[in-house]
Every structure is written in structure tokens, then in C-alpha cells.
Length: 109
Image 1: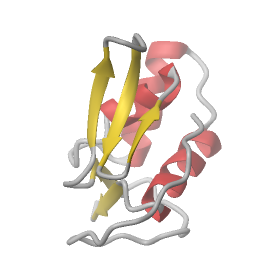
Image 2 (image 1 turned 135 degrees about the vertical axis):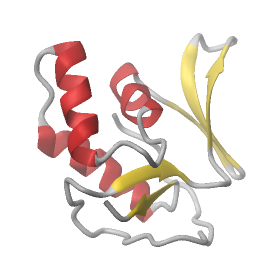
Image 3 (image 1 turned 60 degrees about the vertical axis):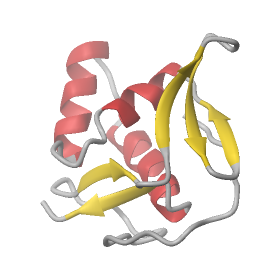
């Protein structure tokens, strides 16, 4: 679930860089970020104006559910159903890092 650091951009909705996530927060990709699949790399990628971030499978699975409708708790539950064991704290840490980089925004739950 690791990503490489880049610069940050301003986002228009509520974000809390470095803050802990609540189970009722509804994460979504920031407007300037897009999840895609690189045919060249045969891997999911996160497209950002300053960078392309190659994701591992678990990072991509988390971000696929970051649509502003699913809560953090629902994302953890969905991943748990798919993969049997999903460490709640690792999902939250991953999302917290992306919020701090302004790649993910949080909506109220």
C-alpha cells in the first residue's frame, strides 16, 4: 500500500492532513487525481498532475472503494469479505497518508 511522496495541491472540500480517520468518514479521490490501469506496467496506477504512482493490489482495492459513498468502516468490511483478513489500522494509515498528500478527500459520514 505504499506510495511515493510528491508535492501537494489545494483541494476544495474538507480534508484533515495527518488526522485520524473516523469509521464514518467517506473518502473519495481528489478532483485532480485519477485511478487507472497502466497497460505498460500491467499494474494499477494513481495519476496525479506531478506524478504517476504505481500501486500494489491492496492499495488499488482500497482506492477503488473511495467513491465518496462508502465509509471507511464499509471499505474495511468490503475488503475483509474479499480477502478474509484486512488490518483495519493499515487501511486507515494508508488513507491518512493519502489525505495528507491531498490525493484523497474526506466527506462527512
